[in-house]
Length: 405
Image 1: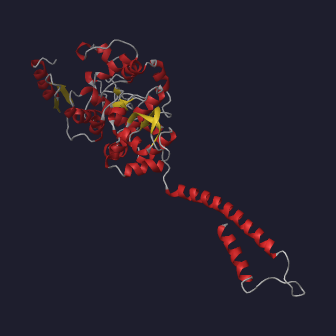
Image 2: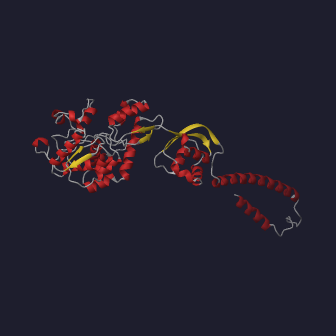
Image 3: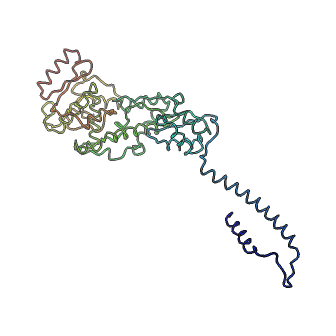
């Protein structure tokens, strides 16, 4: 608009540059020239005033494009924001803008670029203030005093029933809320392919196995669904990090769900981390090698004969559990127990607990060996592994001498 007006004035000036004054048809000067000149001057001043105001408005608008919008002070009040695992600085900035903490994403990004410690922001829930300048907001996220500590530990090998009970005590939400939320497996992020099996065995589609053992920062007032989703997402993240799905399918030539079941068995049976992979190897040898037959000479190839499935099903159905040494043959061979592993070939219908990363890695890439038996031989939980029954009997005798059996 300014350029158009300037051109208009230039054209007028150019057209009248060599004229001393306008004349009428008789060659006489027209009257009223002076009045028109004063009017024109007044009009010019008015226009300049309007243009000046518009110019200032335009400058203010243009300045907004170059000056990053940011609040001036350190804010007021209190608001809680959550920084999630793996979020970028831009994503954190968007969270802060949405919560009314900082004025613009750009302001927070610029503050982070100017601070070499910005990469140290940890996931968790933080207390911050409304309408803070970006530098002050960044400072609060880097100060762990502002982090709300509400750590909830899921131990390796914990069952869903145990986790729900502990979560209910921690959050004051009813166990029923977690049981209900756990039924929506797709909604929690567990795709159908996770329950595919290549061994022809039945599938027990539950959340068991997918609540990854870790310490979690539980968001304040989080729903049961949100908490379970957090744990499932952690499982999926770890599975992706170790390339669990592809490696199991290519190297073990079984489905990821079968390997997850084996990981849970190893987690339950191994007395320490070192033996996780070896126990997984025993499971694979017994089930897939064709070199092992079930007890009592019934001719079924591929029997695991692990006791842990019995206790898992008893716990799940509200029955009292037993030590392995106290279990009778009626307990071990109970046909009404779908998780029994005696007198029945193949893996159980699902995981029997929630295995940790080392157990997943052990099931994915177990050490080479021909072992078919193992037994804990000392009170530190270390096991001895054997290929023949004779070797195994010697290991059992050692365990008895050490007071383990």
